[in-house]
Length: 612
Image (cartoon, rainbow, N blue to C red; front, side, top):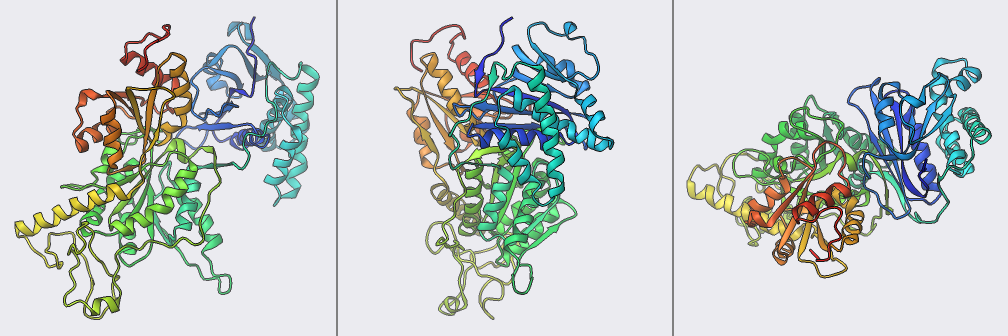
């Protein structure tokens, strides 16, 4: 039987039961590899209940730096869940390794004969070593990490150092965890030929990189951008973003001398109320935000329309998940593109920003508040569960201490004194952006209230058609101004001349390098463009017009990005070829390449000589 042989290039899947404490042990494994200088991308696939259902944790080890999900066939499974055992066995590639608890006899022959079976009596060891049932459950996870350390030739000292760091505030927990590690390590070393034919080797590829999830990076960006108010209603997968913001605000937003909190975090009764509070805080001059997912966006649309029409800065983090309705709460999609772009009734358009990795999430979160103030409009940061709730290797988060916040066009009392009459919705500069005031800035002039109804340039209520048309046409000019102000797309040129292009947003960027390499193996060369904002920068139209055909990758059923491009830029639909993936799992490079080759009429077993 052939076995998989690989060094620093494989996928291991942990199959556990939700609520058993396995997440910490699995993360310990992934972080240990990261500390060894090996690129890893851990990915948690968990159910939407508290405990009892199957959960999976994939760790892709890739010296090439491939961060996207590889696919269903993995190289090793740590099968700790009887409920999913048969499915987990099937997920192994031929020649792979099945690590299981051999305390109870399993007839391995009735499952598969083309894989390697590695049985470790985990529960037997735990029953011998621990009396407390909860300890048996928790330390069982640490024991299998110790066994993997021997089987994969991991640096044992790195794992011990991580445990010491993890429990530095609870020193008494360090020795028993290290003992559990040693139990697993010693058993594997004595009973198996270590290392296996798949193993790891210390490298120096992570350098100054960090391991962080997108929600935490966004929260840090919000803190650094000066945000002081967060109103929210809990919903997966955005809850951890506000929780992280609260943690960092407790650290950085409390006066050291007086103990006074310089921030406010309010859990509202629902998402509509949360958005209303953010609008009120923002109108009064605070940098305020909320975070939600698709169902919450649906509830917020009325107030998003108010903020758009009354022209109030608002920042919303939408961590997208599977829909519609409750959909798949713990699965990833880019399913809110259209609902956010056109959020609210009537002729309204919202500004969208698309981060693709944690560093990007930090930068965009920080910039979002400046954009909202500059444009006096809602800005929606479009993360997804894949980015928000998983740890990623990222460049360090950097902040320029000399940076000044952009508050936009805000008049003070002295400036108002010089005006004969203040016009809240008067376009002085021709860019569609008017001048605003904070309430109470001046005793006579300025804005003391706002409304969501039609008005003239001086904020006087008006139902005259010409006043309404004049106002909404100005909002259109402001949207055009935004297109050139927001982040430009990032364009990646192919190594050879390409007549086809690929367009995508967000975490699809994680598979780009692997996708490009797979295509080039068949002589197919494509230029790629990562769109970072809506409204679309003029470079988006230039890129698409330059290519004969353009593939638009959508992580949703209805090709929402493609639809938005056609609606807004009037592209010929025949020119934009749709690549779609929407089963709730992160898209793979193989999935994209297969659909592209099919559209080009290239069979998988052919070696294309023409360049697309």
